Image (tube, rainbow, N blue to C red):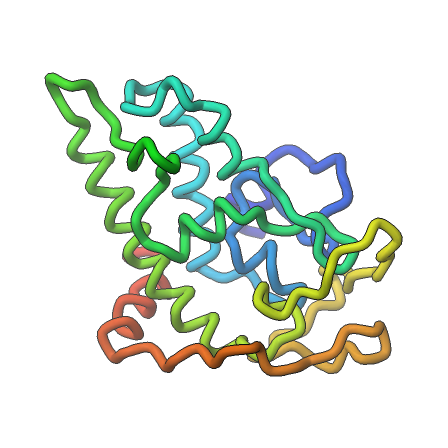
Length: 212
């Protein structure tokens, strides 16, 4: 069978969200947020960009070389949600803002030197983050009542040992099923997410094929 970015990387040696398959630092925000999310083309494109970005910041010149500790938070930072390691706030913010990776009070990441910018790579990343922003505007609107939506997170506790659903038992569903038996309740968030525009939807659909 065809292998993907998510399962070609090294096995993970720590407890992760819902026993999802993949390498934490490269996985998509959706894969690290929703337990019944089925990995699709959009997730693979996001993972590919994360692989590219990870190795680029380590091997190519850029304007944030003095802030590598902060940059690595994008790949390695995590939060605890329902007893599982989940997507970190920096990755979630970066992907959903559509502005690319940046360090607070310093600026956005740009590859190249003062004399010559790496226009092809910068352009590729800019386009990718614009499409990711559109994708999550649509996805967050569709899933805003999910108990796993970040806005609906309950306070984290060290003794929260909710077991996730094994990947082999995942269902292809548009919304999360009833998790009330596990003490996880679906409920509307405090504020409603507005419906995305037609332009945003059109941008999001570009991620449905590998020709985005």
